Length: 301
Image 1 (cartoon, rainbow, N blue to C red):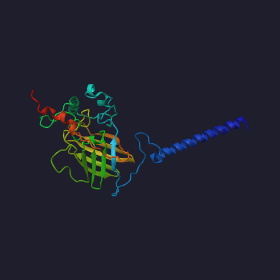
Image 2: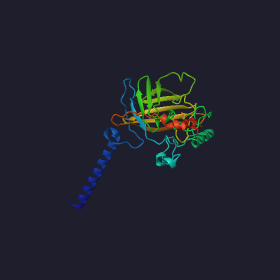
Image 3: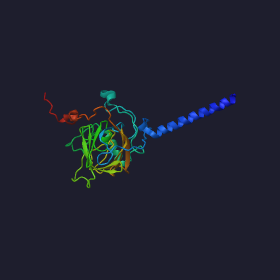
Image 4: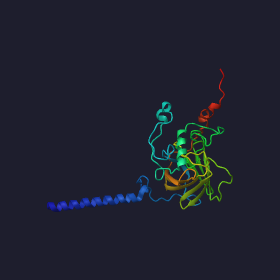
């Protein structure tokens, strides 16, 4: 065989092998995680979740966010905590990317000023009876219930227990929980506000939509002083994106604080440890001295 013929055959063989490899890679991409091929970050192939007895996607399980949004919803660098001389790296905050659509929370000038005041006084706590309104200090620091949507991205797991008429979400932090009343016709039946708000749910196709009102004026969104008020309206959307992920987003509207509605989004991850369960994190004993130590009677000398 002549050299020219051999070279031509070799080129054809290589081209054929490349074409086969390309076709195989596209097939694997199309098959996605069901075939063991990982999806690209931030993208999920089409997925149909298992159904509960009433035909809706099954969201039962223990889930957890792995963002640094509890330190700051917006983009932030790593930084020391309030007392590095005592805590060192233990009290430092991790850096993180923004989970806010567009990157920045659209505060009104008054809202931004209040946010800055919150941050400056985040460790200066006040309690009921101090006549400070709204109270000073991060509610998390004081072991208060985290509110919505903060409970969904704090560094603690959340358990979802789903029924046709109500969905229970229980948070490991302080045992906080809320009930999502499905297809409930009215908002809160009492003229009051709550740390965890009043949640009403409905299904839009395969997405659980939760309408949250009745939040109080003491809720913060993170340790950076971002906050909501008692006129806040939150609409959450939870969609099963794979057997191991829920795509979570929340649209936040509050005319007392923000110039327009804005949205956050991130994935919740299913906890897969064997026999995983919520543990107890009752933080009241950890904060008693911080909150009430100044009221303790001092021994006389």
